[in-house]
Image (tube, rainbow, N blue to C red):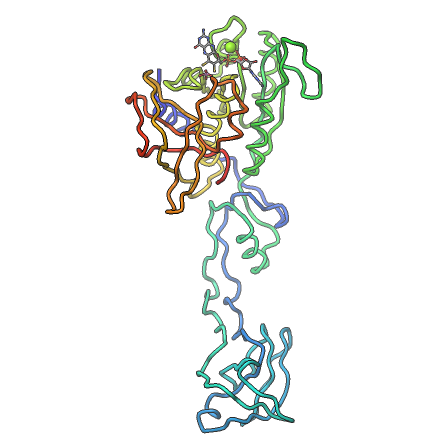
Length: 399
Ligand SMILES: Nc1nc2c(c(=O)[nH]1)N[C@H]1C(S)=C(S)[C@@H](COP(=O)(O)OP(=O)(O)OC[C@H]3O[C@@H](n4cnc5c(N)ncnc54)[C@H](O)[C@@H]3O)O[C@H]1N2
Ligand code: MOO
Ligand SMILES: [Mg+2]
């Protein structure tokens, strides 16, 4: 049986590239950029005034002048004006600095007379001007391939006039719930039945990272599984399946994969929950994650294995970092398995991450996940984990 690290390495070694597509800027949020974006002009593109007031030539002030004749008004969005000697131009924030001026004095530091402004406070040459190109030179790279596009990147793309953007193509993902006990969520369950919940949880997690996935439900019938999976492998880039991978009489997934010539890379990992995890790849290179049916197991495996594989395959760079947190209570776990315990991670007033462990009621207890926000990964080689020790955490909810 593989360790968590071995299973993870095996999964990551099969990461693929889904290719590139072009989307409009209004559709780009959450997508992974696949081109370098350059500045088409300097930032700012002209000497930009940063305060409302007057613009003057500092030389005049240095020569002893304190009263400046008002020669014009320069508003944002209008062509550059030119100052004659000894005067000033009233100027608004965002306007281009008038020719023959080099200093801007805000209204707070001047006094208006009939046709002049008097300076009532000392001024510095060049003040209140955002110099052309002082942030970014024309042609400089602003964004690199691999970054996730969010609000700040959208602002940069809009600034340089990129209306269409090359991003990683979305994989087509099938989410398959297997099981005779499962019914649709809008149906009333009989005593022995359950509403399909896992795959809805998986779908919402995938949507949050900008990936769409389509839900299917297949009964525990070998022939049906064979037929349906044969179609799914032909139609999808990735299959995430829930259930049917442990030792039960109706856990047909391993056999059906064999029949379909889909090579199992590993089945079972030294971990709790999620020990029955299965990973396979078809002859057409379509990966298959067989997540254990118990809700907490599947949810943990999705975050520990499937999401990193997806980030890598979407060519995300850098991939989200693995965090570490301080355990706040002693935990004992003496099986030779890596233990993923739900924790509620909070930031302390000193700025460190503290993880409060939640004792679960087994891996079927989905409700516990709503009061935690991460899984802490406790090493298989140890049995006792002390308060104050630091271990890796895998977030499923942001802080
Ligand atoms: N003899 C053994 N029995 C079991 C083992 C084992 O090693 N030997 N492993 C246990 C572990 S650990 C887990 S986890 C489960 C995994 O079972 P399967 O992946 O085969 O899943 P199922 O048998 O189909 O279902 C298990 C459980 O999960 C519920 N389930 C399944 N799909 C959904 C869904 N979409 N939404 C909500 N709930 C779902 C299902 O009703 C079952 O209760 O096996 C143990 N047994
Ligand atoms: O994955 Mo199972 O119990 O470890 O739920
Ligand atoms: Mg089973």
